[in-house]
Length: 388
Image (cartoon, rainbow, N blue to C red; front, side):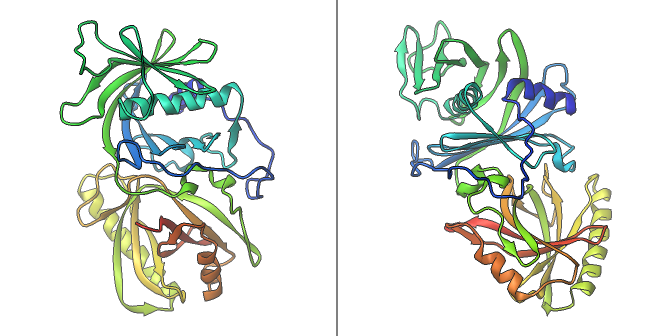
């Protein structure tokens, strides 16, 4: 997995080490997004792909590419089957006209500038061009090919088979910087017969094939918050002080959940934690009997008064949702997190201020109390689009 990530780091702009405290609000200009504007009737596209790196075909990776039009994008890459390694994912962001990278295992993001910013946008736009062909760009004839300008950054090019009909779709997409230097290209583009999306292609950098890609799912329904397209350490609201402990932004991983509702809300979080742990052990055993290597993790769903409303079991980044479970997130989702000094340190004021700290346009999900073996605890508040 690490070798594959390094391969991608050679392709994508490299995140530099930062000395800044990631919990401290960045002293920088605010991120500005353009008004949302659908393309061909679509507000967004989320494409999930399986990548097989050249020379590492037995270690497939999953790439989730999110686009909210016109100027929001987020890529997340991690090894399939190794999702439990929390810091293993590689992230790239487009937030308006600013571009960020978050390297595996890091919490401080790096802003990409100059040539790196041009490269990042061309990479985002090349994939968008393939996903939405022929919409989203002003394609102009260039001999038998078509060319589109990415103003201020470079060009995109779509090429067709020599004997292609007028209605044919491209077999190759490529990008180049404004000075004409090639950036990257998609070769051997295959198209689905039952949808507008490609079925797969090969990513090449110069004379080197980097990976072979198969698109496994493309979705254009739903909504995403603007903060989803900004690294957690740079979200505009910044960490807020809630007593002695900081509120921080976080992204919840994709997960499947099983919710066990209580007959009545309980104020006894300690007893409920024991029930949740016992249920997690029981369901882990059932998952293992069904051939899954995943383990169920326990949490508690809280109401606004801090009482336990339900036991929550979860398995992260599910390839398949286990029977009796439901998919809660198919991609990472933003959340606010409040660290607690002790497991029982919880009151309505903390929850109220947590809910009041959500970004404009976001509605609060259900409070969830989690803990670790070292005795630490935290309350999470998932952030959802207001019109979801």
